[in-house]
Image (tube, rainbow over all chains, first blue to last red; front, top):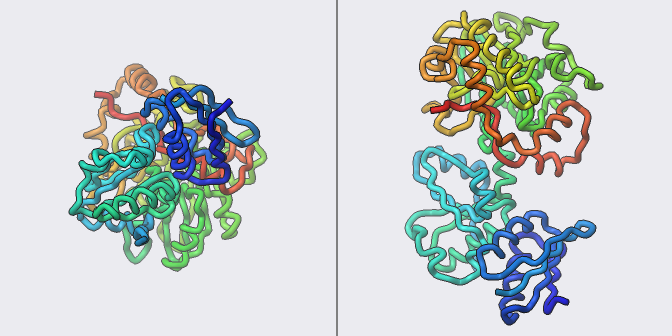
Amino acid sequence: MADIVVDAKGLACPMPIVKAKKAIDSLESGQIMELHTTDKGSINDFQAWVKQTNHELIEAKEDNGVFKFIVKKG
Amino acid sequence: MEKVPLITAEELHRKMNSGEDVVILDVRNETDYNDWKIEGKKVRSVNIPYFNFLEEDEQVHAGLPKDTEMVVVCAKGGSSDFVAEMLMEKGYKTYSLEGGMLAWSQFYHPTIVYMDEKFKLIQINRLSKGCLSYAVISEGKGMIIDPNQKVDVYLELAKQHRFKIEHVVDSHLHADHISGGRQLAEQTGATYYISSGEVKDTNLKFEPLDRHDRIRVGEIDVEVLAIPTPGHTPGSTSFLINNRFLMSGDTIFVGGLGRPDLGGKAKEWAMDLYDTVFNKLSDLPDDCLVLPAHYADIQEINDNGIVGATFGEIRENNEIMQNADQEAFTEQVASAVSMEKPPNFEEIVAINRGELQVDAEKAVELEIGPNRCAVHHQG
């Protein structure tokens, strides 16, 4: 179960990552954030962002046009 | 809060052309940036992904110039607004490119190549993709060669230079961009030509170029000679005006030759390319200006803002063209082909063959990215 779920559906770039960043800042290391986005452009950006931070991308999947990312805070 | 000033693609291009240095801060992620970016001879481009600015770390923007104006660019204009505004608050002089790379990909710039009392030749440069199309105008009549998707550009050009579009041609079946040919012909009542070899086994409505070795534009003098120039594709056709201007499609570029592999028959098509370059076009005079459908590098834009070179210059500078031995040539051309293909080229070919229909938004999205139709010099 995620510790926090960020609903960024319908939001355009850069909002999905802005919201994700805020949310993950509120977590403790090891806790889980789940992000939902419908902005295709933010998919690559989100993965690039996670990669360069110390967080870990646990899962990325698409469900009916909604992209779901599960990230563990580093 | 003060709103960040926006700059349109057209204004940015004017700024790039004005001779002043332009600093572009591209805030897309590194992969997208490395794949495709705004280039210009006097452009200094920096890539810092927008999400780095979320860290509120002074180091992120410490290297950026405070005294020079910067144009912030992203994919669609959202993140560039965000970053530009943030930097503006910190005392930087920033603009945000309205509509981002999406808008840049839709920007076309016309330049007059040649003009006398009899005819006018205009090159239309779509800078984001290095795609070139042409308008041949005489006596109020015109022919458009290799129009791109945004047909309004050509309609506007026809209005501005007062000509009626009578002929629309595609030099070949394009793999890197969606042709505007059929749509432009439909909207203007012009005839749409393409070589029948390019679109065989499709239901496309077209006038076979192979049945016309000449197309007359205007009342007098300007005859466009269609020369089959296979190599990039089997039905590639070049157009010659008065032995002086060769619209070479994707066969011969200023700095290279058309890649022969996009149909999966690299060696076979490379042999066609050899025949085209060394036999068919060998009689053209050295002072004939070669005007291709693409360029791969902004250095190919000359001081007059035109992409083109005389046959003499190309013969002299293009290493591949000096390899007159057929076997060595085909070997070199086939092996020089890069693994990187134009983005989405299979879908784009299907659209250009009339086999796939997509909505306007999807069409624009498919075209985003660089052009990769040339075989470059191999050192």
